[in-house]
Amino acid sequence: MEEFRNTYLNEANRLLSELKTNIEDLKKNGENDDLIYNIFRIVHSIKGGGAMFGFEKSSTLAGALEDRYEEIKDKEARLTPELIEITEICNEFLIYLINNEPELKSEDITKQKELIKKVKKIGK
Image 1 (cartoon, rainbow, N blue to C red):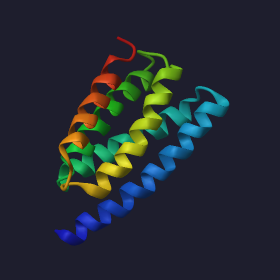
Image 2: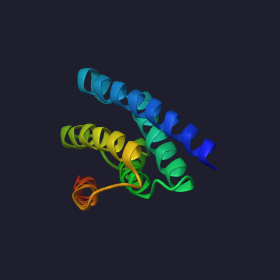
Image 3: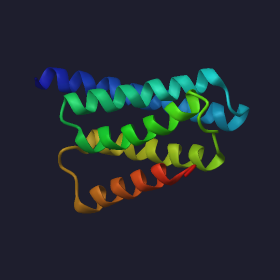
């Protein structure tokens, strides 16, 4: 199981690096269906793999982002500068979470919960 967990860690870090690039592209070029789909796919993968390999906090945060980007992908919501900004913040924190779970401090868990609330509130 530890080998699979390490493989997930490597893949998650690669995906989060890709997410950073996609966010930068969104900031430069504006909304783009391919970028939205890529972001959705990345956070979906982080959520699913995280849940499978015991990265509960990162999985839950990625799931909140996934819900937002699914709405945008399905044209049920619009991309906003606020969502791009919070996605960038979440990406940096996901890197931290994934590389530190399960040894998180109480303030890490508090920050994770605050970010989830902010993500869910956007567009509501």
